[in-house]
Image (cartoon, rainbow, N blue to C red):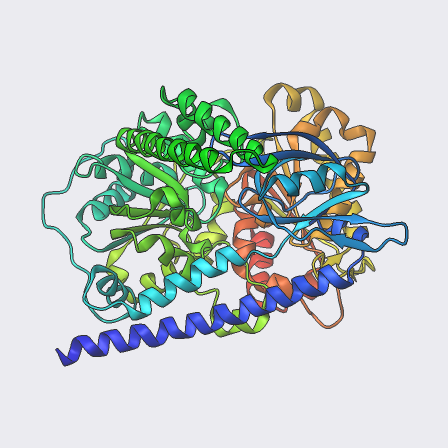
Length: 632
């Protein structure tokens, strides 16, 4: 008994520390938001993608969930990448002649957004009137209290848990309580490779927790889909989550391809018909009882309008209450039908707190991209499950954390990392990769994965040109290139290196030949860790007539923007060039691991070796590439 209380106290101490660090992050983000709202000019907010101004207001209507929504569109600065996404809170404002901003006293929520158009859920008809009548209207992101509130609630519940499954999982993940497994014969999956087969079996055998560790290109999604499919032979329904909407959409799409009935809670970010057909909203609308429910809701709204005019209020109130009861009855019936048809419920981690999942429990929870999620966010979903399967790669992108002290304190150490260190027996490493030429893969394998990765035969020697070196470092040392700091959230820019990057891209396109490039749809990615450099490269490519025929084949983004993606050719502009050997942001080697593993056939790195090779990682990478070039 004494032993189990020791497990518990060490797990609780660790979680209390996470809670304290999360509180620091919350306070920091809230204060930063306040300062930005009060002090930052509208131009800077627009440039950072957190604000659209000026706006034009489109149609308004009630959606299938009976929410009042309005469509808005940005009229200017359309090429700036924005950070609005489904579920984020926003606030509207107007700008007067003296350029002072006046905020409306309500917050709204993004229901759908693409590049230039957004559908926003409003809290009331009065809010709609304000928006429709406003001149010089804008919209900006609002501080997201809800997500933090959910994380604090979850972590507090886990700390207090006693004598239940949540307490057991806490003590297994963080304490020295052993994880247990079922003992039955392994299943053969001839269509998977040996390490994928082993991972699926480990998931099937786990009573408490299993981790699928998927380095770049190793078929993590394929393995996870197989594990979910197998689990559904034993369980009626499972919960599948990820940190971002995009990751949830991706895994949902693969499950639908496999013939699994998925119910997607929360709007997908990429709205196409295939995706929409399994969203909660669309399924709700397609239910045979929906037209009746819609008519009842419309009648309720009309009666509210009559009651405001003041005649016969008591009788109207009785009618409204009776109609509301009928509407609730229908909603419950539709919900029950939707949930009973679905085998997989898919949503983001915070989406598991959605009212439609209230009180629902699951045998198994799958968390994809678990290495990108804050621990507290994972617990929001874990409260609903008996066992947990985490998939991801803690050697790739970590969670985004704004407060440096919280990050140094260990807030970026995820639940997946803790379990990998604390319960190594629950981890399966996927070892065969299907993306890269072996020479591109090898450095990442040796530095991050103990040299355990191998290339599938079909990709091992893949290349575009004969006798081409798969990986090249273009050294800008001694070229008098200079980096400039352009502000906290944009980081640094090195214009000369940007120009050289574009020259390199042109030269490689010329080598391949324009006709072949278009015929074979050979694609390119330009990556820089710094937003300012990304924007510079985008501008230069847009202005250069040479690239006009190839625009659809060239993607330019930050490392974070390239997570989970791949291209035939990747060029990386590292930007840093200074006497002191300062590399700042580039110290996060997990980001660099993502950058150098996006290329299928050719990787070109541009950087000042004198600055970068003072760090052992870049020194080793530079030497690896130099040795390789000698061989070719």
